[in-house]
Image (cartoon, rainbow, N blue to C red):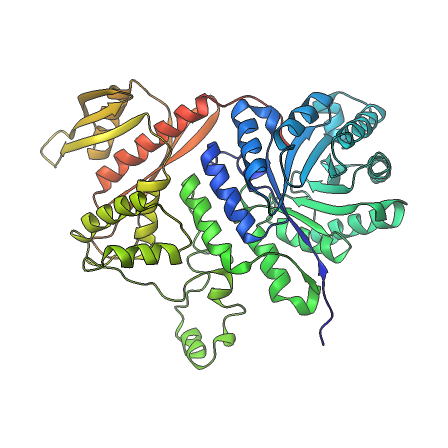
Length: 514
């Protein structure tokens, strides 16, 4: 009989560290929708945001704390009373709230960023933890840039904050500097030298600048860490964070090596990954482990032969174990409303009758011009018809004239707030002309950082998916559009990005993050 394995806590920071990275901004409704799915996934702690960053982030954290009951809800705060008070105000309605406070510990940060001494930051760290403990005994502390911190000072700080009341001590590899063996040794050293370490859970928060975030996290687990801070799809600052799905499935697949368990319901991993992609508009690379399009695809004849005979020859986990369907279910123009509704439910979405009606109408329109409808097409329709941000701008119609003997010209009619406006634009091509017309109508001219177009599925009648990235005030947002006509998709994507920028302008503040 197998003995019960020790539990590794999964601390998901997609909504905080992930959301603060370029192009990943989410509005409060989007963050709440993702938080509900993280709760369904079974994460132990959801870091909902940084309440002091903006009124919008505060409200988003407060709403998540009020509605999510199946996971701890954490709020980030710098090591000062104002941040901590604001964090508590946001999460005090949670079933199990956590305050996560941090301050830099490396001499590099102390000299060039904070201009403070070790003694000053040590006192501030202990004071912050003690203040947070007046609200809750569920307090986490992070010494930022721990992997470049003098080991004697790091041990002193960890011991001091535990004495001040911290019940979780997180060791961040903030700049992704560590190597797995080295990081594992650092965790082992803390267990050896910090006398009161048993009074706290040791956590790790690894960044992926050298592509080692997951490897470092697993090395830390082997040396005693019992909480891993990670994000869906590995999103986050710069090269991102440790990917939650990779950490969890490494523990699950290699139980013989790690002998630990998590509370993650792995069959929901793929749908949460897809939801994040739909919200941010940032696709997952095809060769991404666990959730990439090619993760369970086999082209080699030798591999195919082995799989036909026995799947374990070339698959160390089943697609179903992470929620990936083994085959695409093809839908067509003869499918009825109930069939579409049932398939949407199987995909993990719960819609109202009115929402189903809008999706079905759009589905029928697409089916008239496209022979086969795939699950990816249906997800694109769901994003366009149900999950989009409330728009200030919307497209009424677009007409484009182009060719090798014509000047590309686009005529558009749009709704801007309560007004209906029409204008035309010229460009070097039809897409350039369409964007020029949109800029004239909306009186905007944000820098276009990126434009990408791809076919969602195969065939010349494939649904075209366009993503654009616009810049505002040093930040960027991604817009997304899908349509069989790539020019229409491009216009929709650009307008979607404008709508996201309108939300961003009302919520952005400059703030220092972990």
